[in-house]
Length: 340
Image 1 (cartoon, rainbow, N blue to C red):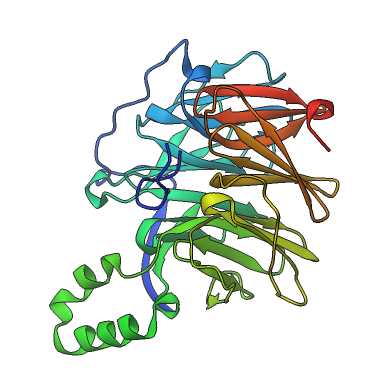
Image 2 (image 1 turned 45 degrees about the vertical axis):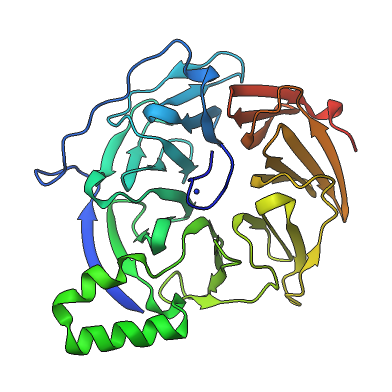
């Protein structure tokens, strides 16, 4: 389920605020997630693989894990907010994001989690976390942007004013000069929602609301807005050094050759909002609302529809199956059962 601000369905001027992965006395007291026998049947928003373990996150701070995709256990999580994204550096070290600007860390493949950041007073969700090498980036609503350059040991929150529209940037410059006491409050809601971040080896990517798409070629120090000729929200970006794909609101999806940056629309068969994607061996799977999974091979798109119509939020390929995080919990489908 994406954040309600930017989907109708069932989400360099540096601030230089650095913090460690250990909770401190300034961290508000959080309520741990309750253990539930139905955790694998509730709303799950993201899923990934850490070594031999599948890890999924979702509502009420639920994190579940499995080594076979069938039997699931619930992790120990120190917050009970909606979790939105999960990503791992390796088979043991991973991060999860959530509402109340929640950022969590695990060192044991998702069995136990600790708070890196938790700010209910901020009333903004972190929506996506990406990891590559020692770099990790967490992004969210109204331009929330936190980055670690040391494998998540310390994090810095930044306000990337280069991503503001020109009028807003000039407005902030005036406020900073003539009303500096109002600067921090005025800048809180000017940047768009950053819905998804992809941390590549050489180039990093972010997508968000109102056609927002930006890249960084210097490990997140600076970002540059790119045009895509689409002005609806993007919720997912994926690809490799040669080809990129954007996907989002009402089934809009676009494919480009990285060297050309000329986006071509994909013929998605129904206008279902695409929440995320997974890629394997030249095939891309798009996970969408209303029970849809789309398979993209080349420029061709086929559809798998679940009869219950529940939103499919994310998925991973595991032992020739797609293991799906959905509005109604974990689902599984054999790759051979998907239309070509």
